[in-house]
Image (cartoon, rainbow, N blue to C red; front, top):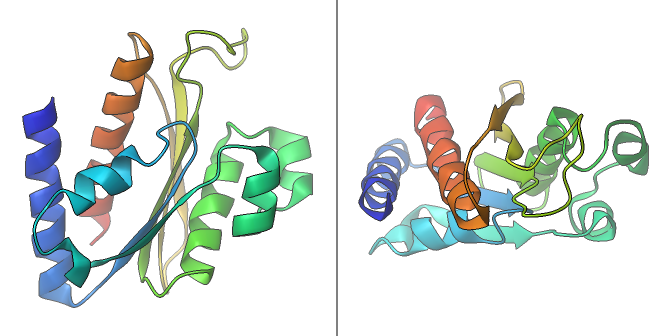
Length: 160
């Protein structure tokens, strides 16, 4: 999976650079893995602005401006929160493109409504509506996190 992540990060960088765009990340369950995959690519400083790791609800509120009402109504693992994270990352950065990841990587923390492996993504591009999606990944914590990085990068590539 590491090779696939690297190839996606390279492709993303080429697309962003060709369009003169920069990007940012807002990560919870991935803890910075998306930003790490991107910044592992030489030259990424041309198209990567910054990454936010907002693990707690308070960090989501304080750092990225996620409304408490959104967290109260939908929870930290929801498409609504992922969208708010992505929008907040755009507002608090110099980037034109953002991705947000929030989920339950496990092994504990899941419920029947939000099981381990459920991950929500948000993608924001300046001037376009924010989009979100939910995926359910099998496997252990490391596997869920790696699969999340893949989806985050694929979603970015599809939008730039």
